[in-house]
Length: 168
Image 1 (tube, rainbow, N blue to C red):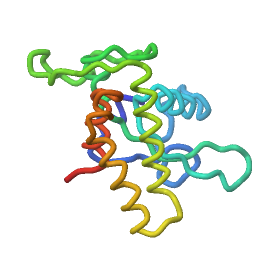
Image 2 (cartoon, rainbow, N blue to C red; image 1 turned 45 degrees about the vertical axis):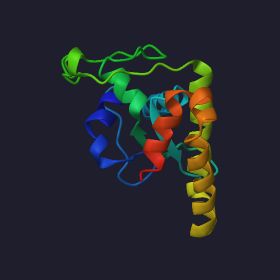
Image 3 (cartoon, rainbow, N blue to C red; image 1 turned 120 degrees about the horizontal axis):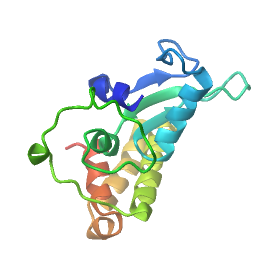
Image 4 (cartoon, helix red, strand yellow; image 1 turned 90 degrees about the vertical axis):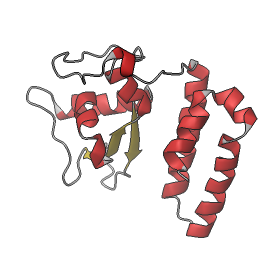
């Protein structure tokens, strides 16, 4: 799945679950296990997951997934994965070591805080607010992420979030 999201990263967020155009699980993998993998990759910060509300009341998982910078670094071999992942070496992206950008390491606490801030940004984007209210909220977050305090507390996560969500 991570490789699929890597290969299709130029498409943006990709639908999963019980929605139209959703990516079906490959042969031999149950729909439940496929969606469980989405949930795990999201939980460990390898993908960005935007869930959709289940209107059936049956607890069906659906939403949109996209590989994030951390997931790309794991797949390209620049960072150790936080969970055990089997990667097909024949399909692994060929990025020579010397050409890879240096990766800044972050502590588990920094990743947790970065993930929490990312969820706040997603919640603001999905909230039932006017464009002006959303822009005001995002402006405050942009200021926070560009502060020295955020850089010290979040490490590379502050720059990563700012670059991802608040492009100049």
